Length: 294
Length: 321
Image (cartoon, rainbow over all chains, first blue to last red; front, side, top):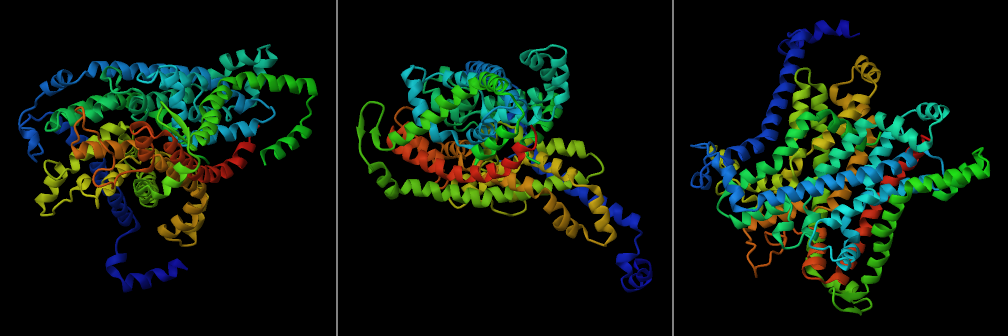
């Protein structure tokens, strides 16, 4: 049918039809990639301007010029004198590393049980994990704050680290989603070889779940690295307990005219995340896929 | 509902009762960290929040006040402002993010050259620490020295005072949210690539246009994923805090010097979100009883959306044993 129609259409609309299918495909190809390039400029633009501004001198940062007239590497040294950045960085690292380690130790067994064990209340437990994962942290903030106040731990980051020993709902959920996909035959085979349930987990399941564990660990690490709400609630007014996010948000108010220094500090907070991403891109992407439900 | 299905499974399972008890105990052991955590950091605080909502409490004196906190909520103008703002974000920001994320995902799956590079570029901003990204956007969009005004000015357009004008501040936050759709894009790309190729081939034979293929095949197949992302988007937006807090703080130029207290919402309450107001009342003004009223309202609203999600998960939890 299309074959018989073709000559007519060519006659009626020569301009549109003269191009071969190949020519149209080329146009389509160009259009798609042009949009992609335009979008790339919009996505990268903010980062580029942040970097350019970070190198400007104090005077130029107050103008609307886009390109630094001189490249002031010293800005990155100056910010360390303006604020206790080293303290903030080490606090942030302590928070991120401990919270991630604690989370992994506590959450892996829970996720394994939810994925592989048959027991009463299994489904209810899984639904409760999802519920706690979804509910805003602000809902139960007041009583939890009062618990930590009773232990005199408000004013430190410990209220954000210690609970990680008791599992993290989001991580449990993600790990469970991955562990469910491991065929039962593997653990059955281990059991036939005389492995107990715990040894099966350590020797057979954990090595197979490495990508998921890496993803969950990285997510937790970056969640802590980026966290603002938690430290704002608990770290208090003493700057020596602050994290990088907390200090960064206050940095501009203390150096109000110096956008260049603020942007230099911003780059300092972004750099580690972006560097790690380029080394572990696949882990990230696979991890994010786990968060979507099919 | 959960217990009913469990009962069914209990009967069907060919376990001897002693083995079953051992299996239950073992599960209990593995689950114990989370069970303790659930009790201490969820169940107890939730009940406690209900109790405090009927008290006046400032960390020093505790005084029962009956329904006073609840009645005050209806007269609390700031709370209603924050509800309106949060609703705005749910209605405008969430759908825009989903549509934009889906569009970008669709584009990347169709690219023949450089798809990997483009995916990396589009994903990257979602990794930028929230505080850093927000600071960057306040700088980029500020009309005095920001590059956006410099570029728009070159073609003769006057850029609005994004984070300084109540009419534009939420749009500024929306731009920031659209910039970081990387996670959504990855999820949508995975869903799009899962759509069976034969469906498109059959549709192409029937002469369906690209748009028809998208609305008649792609959308119906990936609908669950889109729904899931939209609902989680709503729940996340109900918690929207950091971006609004940091943007207002930086744009207002509030100093941290002693005596000057920063109130969120700058400019003119236009970025005050519900969780921000809860935080302000509970932990800056120490009206903790009243903050618990706000917390319970937030709980009720998020629970509605969580239940919608759980309905989707019920079948999902069953499929694998």
